[in-house]
Structures are given as structure tokens and as C-alpha cells.
Amino acid sequence: MNIGNSFLYFYVTCVVLVTARQRSNRSTLGHGRRNVEPQNTSSLQPAATPENRMAEFNPVKKKDKKSKEDDPGLVVEENRCLDVAFRESAMVDILRLTPLRPDGKMDQKQQESQVGRPWQASISDLKRPRASFNARTTTSPQSKAWNWLLDMDSIMRAGGLCEDELQVKQRYALAVLYFSTRGDDFWISNGHWLSTQVEVCDWYGIVCKVESREITEIDLSSNGLIGTIPTELSLLSSLQELRLSQNALSGTIPSLALTQLKSFDVEENFLAGVALPNMVGLTQLENYQVSYNLLTMKGSQSNMLPSSLRRLWMSGNDLTGSLDAIVTIASPATTSLQEISLDHNGLVGTIPWVLTNFDSLRVLELQYNHLNGTIPSVGPGQWSLLEVLRLDHNAILTGTMPASICGLRRFDNKFPSALETLTVDCTTTNVTCACCTECF
Image 1 (cartoon, one colour):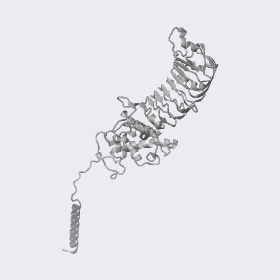
Image 2 (cartoon, helix red, strand yellow; image 1 turned 45 degrees about the horizontal axis):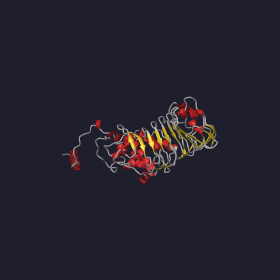
Image 3 (tube, one colour; image 1 turned 120 degrees about the horizontal axis):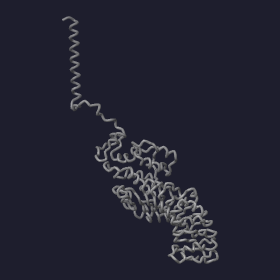
Image 4 (cartoon, one colour; image 1 turned 30 degrees about the vertical axis):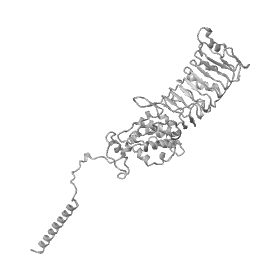
């Protein structure tokens, strides 16, 4: 064997030995591993994103839960239900009303920054609050309600018991009302409120439609409420009756965008500010009862009452200015108003003759004001349904009770009288009245 052949033999032998050693090493490293079949790339799952996780969520069949330690960005199962609901307009509607600052106010810039925001990871965002939404760092009633939705409501956090947009809105609105009026501290009855196991329709003072479970009535009268009326009640789009009378509510009457509201009763509280707030949208309102508060007419002049209104009770407030101004505001309801109670205020001026055009009027109470001038006459058919007319304790009224009004008491002795109560200051020489039921 020559030198060249010897070198070639030596080289081949080395290559064979090295290859054998590498195979042996790979075999050792692969020991204990199960064989993995080649993946079909057409069936690969998309990357884990909040959107994909939300799309996978099945409210009926629970998935295996993972911890945030395994995936810090994971929206865990218990929050997915709430994510689904809040991705819809409920999230936008609530954020339009939810204060973002510790003082409980939301400025226009903050409000606008919320609208149109992508909500696919909304709950995980709120778990890690950012500057644009610091509800978890405030002490406002809205913040407390928000935190309750996120942390304390086991029904919504149960993966198999998702609530829809309506239920989420209703729970949030009632929670804000509860915290705004010191429900934990002063309510006389708060049965099931903020219960984690009882739906809102079974909470004390709440009435819902049987099938849709939409809230139609809230009656918390004489229940020890102390605080303010929150604008979040506007989220209860099917609300027809709101009764909060005989409590200790303060603050102002909010403008509530409730198109189905028929009755609003907050009598005997400590509410101040505008007596007649903006009622645009309250197209079905029939009863507006705000008597015995601290309300004024300042800022009310530009607002008009809805044409559906039947009862206007504003007795015992701080209403000043002319009676004519209120009559003008009520003019859209000329054919529907049945009861007007403005007694025990500070109204001045004359009794406007246009009041006689309110054909459906049954009760008109203007006593204890500062009205002057004479009492207007009524024409044929006017005030034919009137049962109560009280004008007493208006010492500046003068003249004689018109015969046309006295005629409402007599009907020429042919029919029973509709006008059962007619009072005026007639014990002195101020007003002469031969047909009054009582003189003062």
C-alpha cells in the first residue's frame, strides 16, 4: 500500500467513527421523548390573542383554566363572560357615564377618549388600570359599582352563566344607585341588593317584565336613601316608574334619557337646583312629582314639558318669578294636564287667562303664593272637568269671583257639581265670592 492509499484509508476510517459517535449522541439526547407526528400546517391554531381567546369562549362548556403566571396576558375564564357582554354597546354606554377622576367627574376629553375604543381586552385592561380609565382607584359610587361587577359578582364570573348586555347594564345602574344613596349604611330595606345569587328582578323595590326581565319600576320610597340620584339610571331603558319620595336625597334632579318613563316621583326630599330639567326624550312622561324640595325656576325657562304630561306637582319649593312662565313651559301639555299643584311657593304676577285653555284640568292649586290682579273668567266648555280650585292665601288678589267659575259649581242647578272645592281670600274685602266652599 502506497502512502496515498494509506492516507485515504485513514481519512475514511475517521469519518466513519465520527459519524457513529454523533448518531450515538443524538440517540442519547432523544431518550424518553415520545414520537411526534408531523403537523398539518393547514390545521394550525392562530396565535393566542385576546380576540382569539374571546372567539373560542363557549358559555356552556367550560374550558380548562390557566393561570396568569403561565400567560400574563391571558383573560382568565372567570372574566370572559363579562368581556363578551362589554364588547357590545354596554361598555360604551357605561363608560359615557362613569366618572374617571377621583372627584367623581368626567371631562369632555376623557369622555371622548373612551368612545370608539377597541373593547376586546377590556376586562384585562381594567384589572391593570391605566391613565385613561382609573375607576379602580377612585371612591365614587360609579367606581364601587364597577369594582363590584368585576370582583364580587359570582354569577357573571361563572363561565357557564354569562349575562347579556341588558343584564350587565341593569346590574351596573342599580349598583351605582345603591352606592350613591348609602345603601349599606342607611337603607331601611335592602333585601337581595348586590346579591351574588339573586337576579335584579328579585331585589327589594324592583319590578321587571316577566319574559324579558327588563326593569320597569323602582320604588324605594320612605326607605332611608341619603345621597344623590345618579344619571346612570338612564341605562334602564325600559324603566316606566321611578319612585324615590320621602327620603333624604340631595343634589339636583338629573336629566334622564328614559323614553318609556311615565312616572317620576321624588317628593319630600332635599333636592335643589332646577325644578324642570331638560325633558327632551321623555315623550311618555305622565306624572312629574317634585313637591316639597328646595327647587327653583332658575334655568328652567328654556325647557318645555312633554305633551303627554297629566300631573305636575311642584308644591312647597322655592319657586319664584311669574306664574305665567310656568304656564308657558307647560303649554305643550294643554290638552293632557289634569293636575297642577304649585302651592306654597313664591310665585308672583297675575293668573294668566291662558290657563283656562287647559281643557282636561281637574285640580289647580295656587294657594300660598303672591299672586295679584283679578281672577280670569272661563268660556263655554272651559274647565268643565275642574274639581278643585284653590286660590287662598294670595292676599293681593282682588275683585269678584267670576260668574262663569261660580257657574261651574251650580250648573244652573240641573246637574251635580263638578267643582267641589273652591277657596279664596274672601273673609276680607279682597275678593268677593258668593259660591266659594271656604273663605280665608
